[in-house]
Length: 177
Length: 192
Image 1: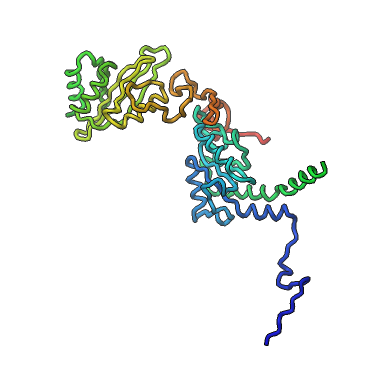
Image 2: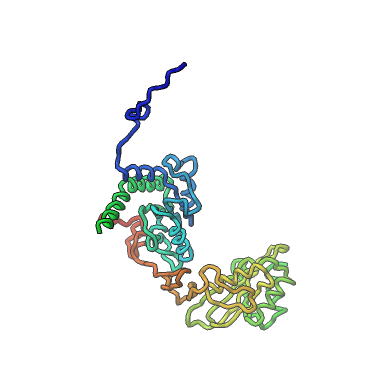
């Protein structure tokens, strides 16, 4: 007969040493930044570079962003890749509005950032006229390395957010009022 | 049948309705009055075996030109491999007979002409805009329309604004000493 293992609620050697104490914000941000699910808003040639970034040679999945979702309801970051015509602009806005918070936006390439070379009656002069942009990536189109750099900068930005702390402040203010 | 033979056959058949012909580097053009345009195109398809309508385009000669517009039809025949161009002047507000019953492909070509130039086609089965949205108030390829665009607003559908045409990182610098300095990439921006 085997003796039952001694178990003490206060001290568990299997868990002890694997516990990390941190701030809730940092923990949440750490989880968020390592599983950014992009919504590929591919509108022009930039989308080809975006596809290349997701493929094996550049491999977005190294950074936890391989889950490209074509449903805005499952996405965290919208990559606006390409020329936003006025005809498409409100459709982009509508897709953006359907994405749940928290959400981020990357303007990939010259066209999405500023209209690019299309100084024209048909092209919106930068997607930031409609939706807030977190990261602008230069290039026409940007190489996959540039998109990776943009996404990594977004990770660094997500890392520094104080979303839970801000929520807590608002909640405390509302409770005291 | 070669293209010059087609031109002379058309001249023999339509006579005064053909106001001119042109030959430039092996390309043959027939200029026809708008009244006879449809009959001539029908003849081209049925008798001259131009079974392929390559393209339809339109020209705007200027706001005060008379007649202001011009339609251009590019024809081709697979049996004889010959190209033929047919042109016809169109006055402002004048309607052009549709050829979508002769070549089905003309339906979308004519919608594009209507969308960009505002020329209407009689008896067209579905004359809606094709590139811009229904309700956009301008015809953007007309001469009086500025390249930068005009503001317009259709709630929940689309809006347009005026695009900046001068300055900015992507525009060449006019009046530069040479083309190297005029290139957009030669610009140096000061750090802010």
